[in-house]
Image 1 (cartoon, helix red, strand yellow):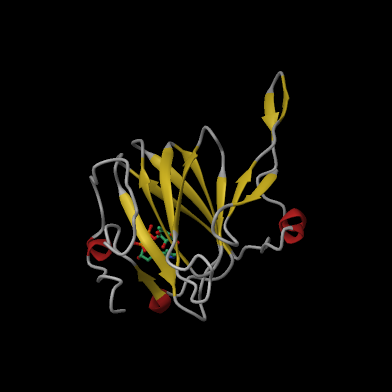
Image 2 (tube, protein in one colour):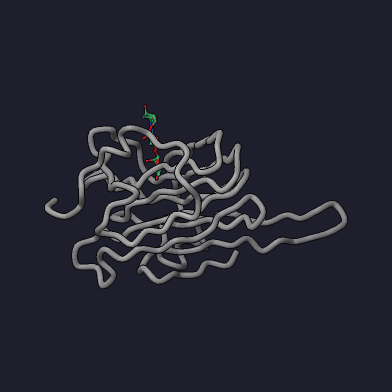
Length: 177
Ligand SMILES: Cc1cn([C@H]2C[C@H](O)[C@@H](COP(=O)(O)OP(=O)(O)O[C@H]3O[C@@H](C)C(=O)[C@@H](O)[C@H]3O)O2)c(=O)[nH]c1=O
């Protein structure tokens, strides 16, 4: 695996290194020991899948409030997504800065998202599926979010938004929170 830190501290892109032969290839996608070597959490309490019928679907931008802030490893197992994060860690040198990457079944990249970042994505293909590994149990009362088009953030979305949950549309402006 190639584990590469991106522009936000603690945010990592994880790329498998295939061992190829005539059958296809084998590649590690996650390794507790190797993650620990990069200072990352490598043990996850739960996995979840997100299936999306339509291209252009937006989910997010979600985060969990302390003491339930989640660290997530996100990969796309079918189709493709434009994935986005916002740094909400007070005191971070990149506070309120964003990062966006493409994750696809084809590139097999995963994004390691540390606690304190908001996360969301837009599907780039129909029938897109996401696999999450999350370091702790989900606590609904701690779940919160930012609006996908909040003017406080320069998030760009490559497609017209076709489907979005009412809850995600209703997150208030970040300014004043
Ligand atoms: C996130 C989550 C939801 N649920 C339940 C709550 C609800 O009834 C149903 C659907 O939840 P949501 O509408 O929040 O699902 P969704 O909008 O897909 O939420 C996800 O969005 C992306 C952007 C993330 O980063 C994820 O961590 C998660 O927040 O599933 C769980 O049981 N466990 C979980 O971990």
